[in-house]
Image (cartoon, rainbow, N blue to C red; front, side, top):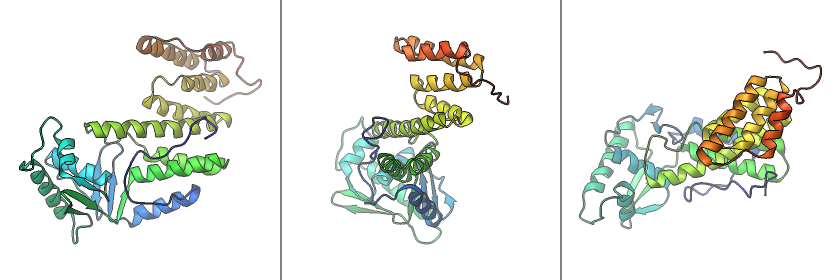
Length: 298
């Protein structure tokens, strides 16, 4: 268990290629090299994008074709039965072996990939055992790198290697530029989205705690705002913001963050702030948090 009382990062994806996670700086170097050498680069955080041989694939005319490719990509290396794919793409409809919708979507995916490739097609989707299997050996995928970075950070944290943990968690939050497939809507996407949010929140919280201990005020504030963008009810983050601004003598900011915390918890969750929050606010407005004799540049 990590020092913040969390059992471990793990991975959001139940499938994918078998990998042996690198740790710390080794992982960061390996990930950068793989991306430079990859024929296919796919990003699932924020807006979905796919580059083949350096060219952006933007011919997803049919949403179902894009969604089909996304699901097979995330589950590459596994045979996904046709019934399962139909259920994912058309949850309101009943599966029938004679239905043509899935075949049409698959034909569109293969056509788009063929058009995107300037020579050979680096992604292969094969029919096998009443399902489809996506193969891509020269692929860089942001969610894979995110999961590897989280695993490396967890390992380093458990071993007490703070510098390596910080490097790995920084890599994870740099990759996390937005929700998993942020513009898409599907039950399987929602599940993955919540999992990645939780992992990103853990990494950001770890980084924020270290920045606060180091009195790195700009980093603390930036990390706190990223945390609140994921979880606007994270009370400990409001405490960190009040501590930081209180140490700088910025009482208006202390008041604003305290007020926002109180309003969100009361109006949205019908709960009150903790004694710790109230104590930090009181000490901050009294000037008790500001180091004597220190003047910060505005």
